[in-house]
Each structure stands twice: as structure tokens, then as C-alpha cells.
Image 1 (cartoon, rainbow, N blue to C red):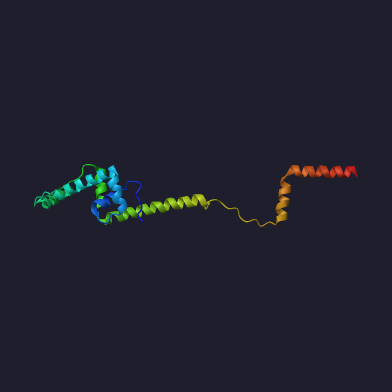
Image 2 (image 1 turned 90 degrees about the vertical axis):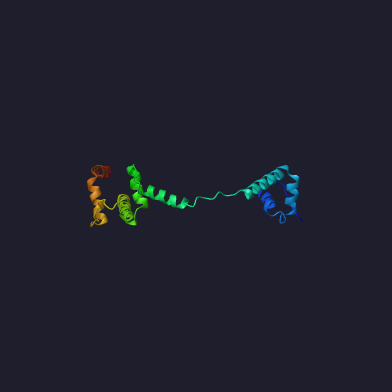
Length: 164
């Protein structure tokens, strides 16, 4: 059972143009019924017939010789702009000019990356030496340094002695 085409399809029109015998019945009936597709098919057939009749003009036998000479002149001509000269030297020059530039770029990337690593990882931050004191000694040093706490403890001690 053949499917019926419901909308216009440019590939179907092209199929009708190049291989009408292989086009499906649905495509043929759609192109016969649809005015837009019929018009497009007629325009394509006209274009193809014009292209078949078209003759290419013969090029001059000296065309390639003249073109090569003109290209050589352009290559030898020194550009006026400094940036264009530098670009031409890098882009079209020998490969030896690119290697030092690539090495410099890699060096800069490594320096920037290393600097970012040092800045983010805290490599250069001074680190405190590990404490050799026991936890009790550290606690006593903290209590000793906090005079307010000691005063409060002493006041509480005096209050208990007076209250008894």
C-alpha cells in the first residue's frame, strides 16, 4: 500500500527530476496535484536544460604561466605593514621560526601555572612547628593567660569558704 504525500518535499521533486521512473506513485500523484511542486519541477527542468546547453569558454594557454608569475611577484613583494611582515614570516616561513616561539609560550604557561599553584596551595605560608607540650600543659598555659577566668575562679572559691 503506497503512502500518500501530505506536504511538499523538495527531495521528492528532485527525485522526479533526475529519476522519474524510480519515483513512488505517491510522489508522482502529489507532483501532479500540487501546483507549487509542478512549478518547481518545471523550473528545475528549465535550469538543467540551460546548464546542458552551456559551453565553458576555453582558458588562454598561457593562463597558468601568467598566474604562476603573478603569484611569485606577490610572494617576493615586501609588505608595507610591519605586523603583516611578521605574520607572513611566522605563518609561511621555515618551521625553525616556530619552535622557539612555541618553547617560549610553553615556558610562560608553566610559569603562570606554577605561580597559580603556589598561590593557591599555600606552599609559601609559614607553618607552625608541631607542639612538643602535652595537652595538659597547653591547657594550663591557656588558663594562666586568661586572668579574668582566674579571678572568677578565685571569687567562687572565696564565696564557698565564706559560705561554709
